[in-house]
Length: 113
Length: 114
Image 1 (cartoon, each protein chain N blue to C red):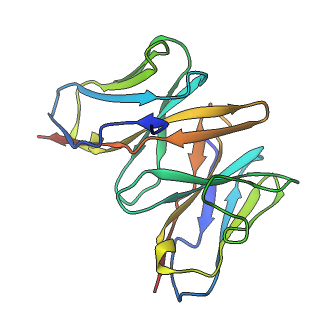
Image 2 (cartoon, one colour):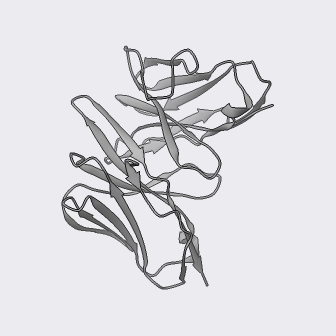
Image 3 (cartoon, each protein chain N blue to C red):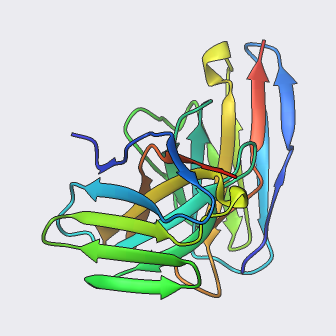
């Protein structure tokens, strides 16, 4: 079982719609979760982090976490063509002074006009 | 956010040779991470580098192939040794973002081995 799983997509949504991206993880002890966006040919950029169960909103982005179900999601409201990218879910694992980020395979999002 | 300068941005190398990739951070970071991203794939962690101690390598990666240097809290290098075409990939360094939790990435090094 992969540590962090995402649907590879592509997820295609019309402009203005809500894009919903999902991620599951295997390490029940994980406490920190991140969403990154990666444009083609570029390095990943951090969008959001979430640590507690529930929702966290930042502009058009909402991250949702359910630790009991080991599930993280990212909602993008009012999707724009500029949101077309690969979205990577990352989970921080480890303990003590040693932590690392494990990434899912990413979901490719295509927002069409 | 922390800014990580990574170089070279790309290189084409002959098999059997070695390439050293450098990452310079504009602030001190405790831990730096080296990832590999093969075309169309996600990021695979190679190793974690702490200042003053040996790097910790992930399963499938060994120090002889990917030696790492971390002489201070703002700099790290990754060497890809005795390269083969299978080493062709994008290599990324990462460090803790000083302004918020989460890690910032360098711009990446696109390596092609011929």
